[in-house]
Length: 339
Image 1: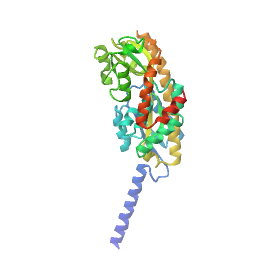
Image 2: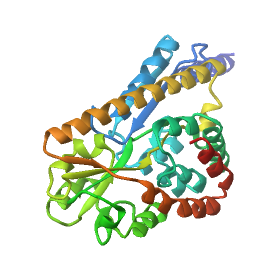
Image 3: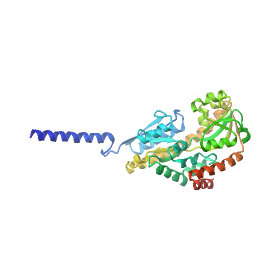
Image 4: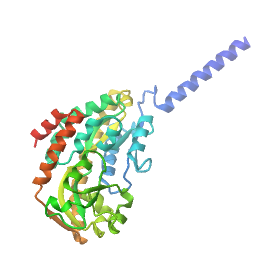
């Protein structure tokens, strides 16, 4: 009898322990409480990415009455996109932000469509594309080709990119022979080579010094990013020509397989928070573009506009070749029709 009583006591203890484990993981408690780790790779507290993820946190926690907790990381669990994506796949992060260029490295080459030079002619055009059927189709392809490891829950932007360098551009011919810090492979590099420029690889953290010391003649980026780094104050960063060659796209991702295991209510709240984060990030970025353009001019930078027609015409055959290689010719045509 004592032996039976001991066995029953042991079984009871195991059952209690099992219940405790379920409670710790948020499963089987009836509370449906979860914690999400949301991360981007920028370390500046003024970055629009931070504004977007803070809004995601606010909405998710408010809509769930605190049952969804969101922890936001600004470069603290990875300053490289590869680190963040790896954490998303392993479960160490739940919401991350990446660029199309990185997604192509994971085998989803179609997403590089959004990185083609002069694909968009305005933010209105860009928003119509990514918020419409084309954006939905690209998101579906990402989910399908990644076996649902990556689910797009929103499209953010990193601004519109312009040239800045040691001299202003009056025409496309002024780029001939100039070194420019940009991608050194793929369609972006091919485009700059076609202009006559020489694509050059310089780490972002080393670019200020490279511009100051004639290591590179020029670079290209959006106002909030290069002005925050004071590139406009360097010897080879003073002259800004608004080429507007790239209305950038960034992808807000969750792990689709993990997302599918959430309750319907949790899914709905997460998607609502993602939608709110999209609007917050875009509004922050749009405002910062004007702010940092003015800051650059106030601090001595010279800004000029340029006739972009030759730039655009040069890009079209490269767009078509890239779209064919990516098997997205139909999507390219849809984007052009939405101009």
